[in-house]
Length: 326
Image 1 (cartoon, rainbow, N blue to C red):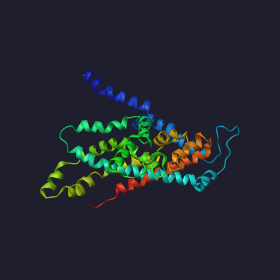
Image 2 (cartoon, one colour; image 1 turned 45 degrees about the vertical axis):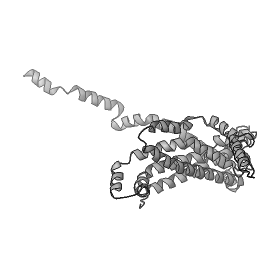
Image 3 (cartoon, rainbow, N blue to C red; image 1 turned 30 degrees about the horizontal axis):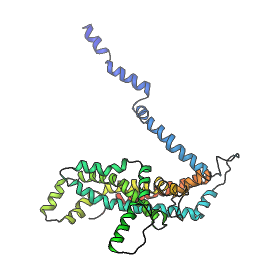
């Protein structure tokens, strides 16, 4: 009898341990905060803090090469940016590059992804082959493409010269990176080639998630291939396309390395040549900060880049949430 009473009175050991654990760490909400603490610290140090410092520096004329303390100049840097023709040229070139590159890449990647997704054998092999340029160093790829674009001894002009001589044609060989009308487009072609495999792999993942029952029902109803693509594939692939648009447009607006390797290094380090046709907003930021050492003005340019990318991303996400009739 005494043993049974003692057994009933004594609390279970797991409840005591659980109560002690929550008393020490403050309950479930505190445990959730502890679990999220590394992520919060990471974003605070590497995102929120640099963004805040850059925002404050954009209202000063701070330069690391000056012995004087930074001076508050108000909105002078932003007024200078909005009145500077170079900034307008850089923004237009960046948007042109993003629209051209992303448009061409998706237009090429979508039919390739559909064809590869319908393969029964060798799908993984082809996917690997198309994805290899993605893991290639952008500097190595840029150097190779720069040699392809050489006006005299480049492979492209060598082939064009052979075709011209074979058929007796008379036209001037393009100068690609030295031509203001072709320089930005030439860099866009290289970027399309390098990231095409990434778009194909993502689109193949989106296509594989579409239930096959929809296609079977469409075939029973007598739908042709275009109708299947128009009313089944394209609507159900919309989330994947929106993801690619948001990520790739945000990435291509910030293009710098490709232009720097293919054009700036080949022209003695000048940014934006020839005739500012390849001057991008990040290239202008680089020149302002690390060549002219105007870090206050460069911070204002960085904030403008942030606003442009955020606006495009929000607009594309808004388009993705709309209800479209197919």
